[in-house]
Image 1: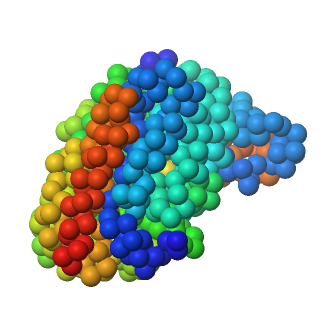
Image 2: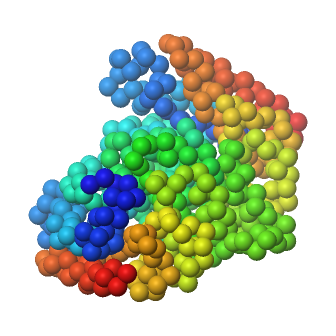
Image 3: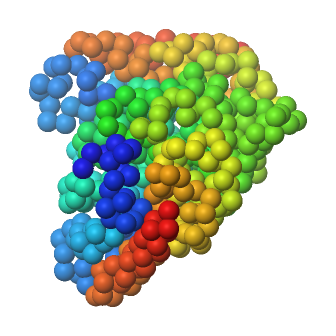
Length: 273
Length: 273
């Protein structure tokens, strides 16, 4: 599977899904029987989740904080998880990095080379030279924060300039000049689906990574109503509501069931396109 | 040494210095004789730099990207470095993290608990609930990006709202309500020292971490002219111009000499206060 724009669209059609499963594998929420039995419980948990969901999704998004917080062992678990994800699937390092150029290059090497992620989430505050280093890696993607799904997104992202343009739109307008639809996507929170139609006026063709469906309360049908384009153009992420659907020995089955329910809804949306 | 506001001021007076040494310990720039001889060249390099500079500075700031890029071994080197820094000195994890609350808590645990850093740099884009989790840790500090020293700072940080207030000032105004001078500092780039007088009108008392003196071209006297307050209120960082002052076997001596030259200038500034 080629992980370019067209390859991603083809894979979405094949899977009848644009679901991204967020591997926010919080050690304090891993089922007890795995903690007790396994030497690397995070990896064993992820492995079971991947086995249970890989035919229902197109992407996996490990949230790096949950691995980093476990020290060096967490990085081993992350590496093993990356190696286990099928090569067909798009991988996202949810790391929200961004620094001056010589530092961003180091972050890019970590996630694109050492760990072989296809993409990384990046924060826009430091501007062009903090983002461009990531774009110099062939066949790799930057997923830039635009409008996030948390309450704090109201603090700065919606501040309007003298022309009435909110900051998140400035981020979309400027940054979309730095790359192309082939190496940039944007994070757009699902808790504000009507904003998606505004966003589609600025970037009609880019893929959007939409977190906040599930535990954070976003609605899939609303997201699709305003966010779909003719190549789908959406990766909809769900983390906790899938991976922690059950805390018992049936956790993988419950995760599959939660993912299948979203995938079924996606399938009917794709069928009607 | 208590790492509160007053303790930091006392330590600055004792050291006659407000220098922070940035441990951007890029493996590709570590002197060859260390690479060849040592099992953990990053730690051995840092150890020599710390030994050579600890009486001339008040803080150390490892740039996390350079450790993370080495995989699990990099985290071991970072932990050993942290343990080696004298307890008297203020430590800064230059990590520029920031995410929704349940994720920021994980980042805080990593840097404040597992690694015992006194502080961490955080990006403001995601707003209050991405920053507050860091502020719940007793005697720990958030150092929030306000106005950075890179060219890309022009892209978004200077966008003015309808009242003519640039974004970085909005960040200062809002975020300074979320914590206090006892648990928040701000990153303000030294390449724009005249902005410091504007910043001091908004946050007269907060400590500012000023990168960009040295390799990035900022001037110490200009920074002090506009940024000093009656408790000094500045930590001025220099990374590459100190730690890579020489790439030969004399690297530690050269680092000491570069740090001493800055410390002498700081001493005369402090004497004249």
